[in-house]
Amino acid sequence: MKLFGKYELDGIEVRDASLRSSLSFEEVNYRAHTFGRHGKKQHAKQKVNVVERLTNKLMRGGTGEKTSGKVIRTKGRLQGKKQQTLKVVEDAFGIVAEKTGKNPVQVLVEALENSAPREEVTRVSYGGVSYQIAVDVSSSRRLDLALRNITLAALMRSFKKPVSLSESLADEIVYSANNDVQNSFAIKKRDEAERMARSAR
View 1 (tube, rainbow, N blue to C red):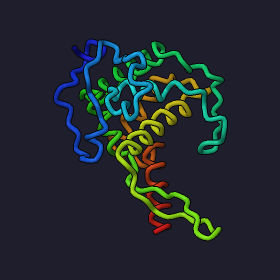
View 2 (cartoon, one colour):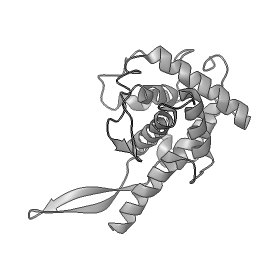
View 3 (cartoon, helix red, strand yellow):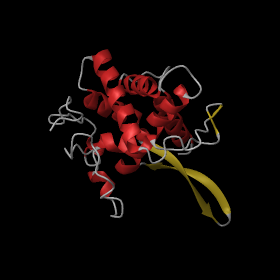
């Protein structure tokens, strides 16, 4: 079965070996909706289709704090509205396919590979003194961070703007897939995390 009746999930190439184990392309149904059947099982989200995970990340109530100089408060406008966010993702994939001429699922995978940080910092305490050290990022967390930053960029770009959420999500996916440091918020966040890790070594 094709995703949204249009896009093949077979033959998607994942070049990043560490993300390969966390990315799932299981063909669950037409809408990529598992109805939360993995919700109460440990590590079961790795079996959830990556398109559904992207949709789940869009269902958020805004940051409520300054992110890149902007305060995003959507007041829960998308929380729990799975069908609405699936429609947003479907429209965004249509825009991506039109812009790139490629399977948008493949473009999404390339965007996730590019925007997933390999290192970050964590705080440790020894003898009452706290300091930061650089650590490697697990494949599951790399994917979570990449999905979060891509969807957060889409929300920020469309918040109180004439640009629709579908258009801003499509733009961010294309920018991240092209490794566009100037325009992609997710790539900037990846570089920021890795720069802080290098300084903490």
